[in-house]
Length: 460
Ligand SMILES: NC(=O)c1ccc[n+]([C@@H]2O[C@H](COP(=O)([O-])OP(=O)(O)OC[C@H]3O[C@@H](n4cnc5c(N)ncnc54)[C@H](O)[C@@H]3O)[C@@H](O)[C@H]2O)c1
Image 1 (cartoon, rainbow, N blue to C red):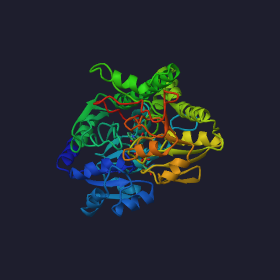
Image 2: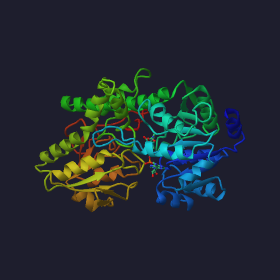
Image 3: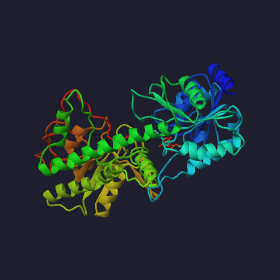
Image 4: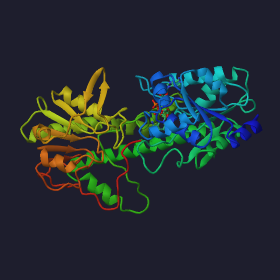
């Protein structure tokens, strides 16, 4: 079985299935198709499949032309028919792994995908889970279900875990050139999974087990969560001490070794950093171990929207205004710069908290023209001089490139800048309040960034 599958991978006659065609699944499907495989993408969403078959990408980092070209060449098709997975020699699963209301793992998508695979599994098939999950999922959840079909993992079928590291909006690192960790249930499982990914990804990185591979992803995202938590706490510390946190971080980042720059902000968002560490925390709770770093970072990061709203309230107060009745214009609602992803965005909390205090809130985001939350539709407004001049406060939550920050400090009265986006603007009309300096003279731009040290993206 192993030799047969390896040979089909090597000569590209293997058919690759992708379950879940979202931020992770679609770029992966395109890489396999570009490498010469025929790819069948299975998604439960008819809307997603119809759009893809019409040559339209719904993922910002995947150009529609790529999808249209692969569909036209017969290299890629998207379907809602799960039985088509039976045609596949290898299947990668990239379905959501959200948290439930009690912040426990919601495994319903992985369970459903596993069920679908089990119904269509056949001897000689490789199955790889890509969804971020707690250590033990592949062996404890997937292996028994697949083996219940009478197939033995390692002999008849092959099972592995390979975490996705896609960073939406990152122009340098993409699915192809980012090394990919792969760990199988048995050495044969690892070998075939490495062969498959090696066919379309520059550098597969084998590890000894599915648990090690699952933990790699959780370590990476916990590392980011903890470090973002640390700089967010540093922003609070600097605020209390009256020191500019950006100056401190930028100066620390001149150290050529032993320091890695992270930047504070209004909180964390996206499908990874706010969620993934909780998968590990949950697993460890079942073993009576409390993951203190994870819990503390989560506590600090999730309190940042409140901190921002307090800054807004304080700054309005200095101008003898109340939050109640104020007009607030939020700049940037995506969870990080230059992308359109709103999932878990701290902007949602900032807007909700301001509205709970009686503010009237509008937003401007060139990447998010419209979004719905709790059945309520919001639309991005234009950045006109009238709108800037009419706002009691402008709050920069996400620092997209291409937004006219000079225009903002020229036109607004008060700017609360949570991202240091106004650092390079000239002195102007607006009073600019940063995360850590309670209040500054009009447009002083206290937050000058040292040259040569661009900040890391704040989340994910
Ligand atoms: N988004 C990222 O940047 C990123 C990065 C690394 C890892 N991840 C992980 O990858 C996984 C997928 O995340 P995503 O961002 O691609 O999600 P997504 O929501 O963008 O896409 C998931 C897709 O799966 C489909 N789906 C749901 N249940 C299905 C089922 N049973 N069968 C077939 N299709 C189904 C949905 O319709 C959707 O199109 C998650 O575990 C996530 O944590 C995401």
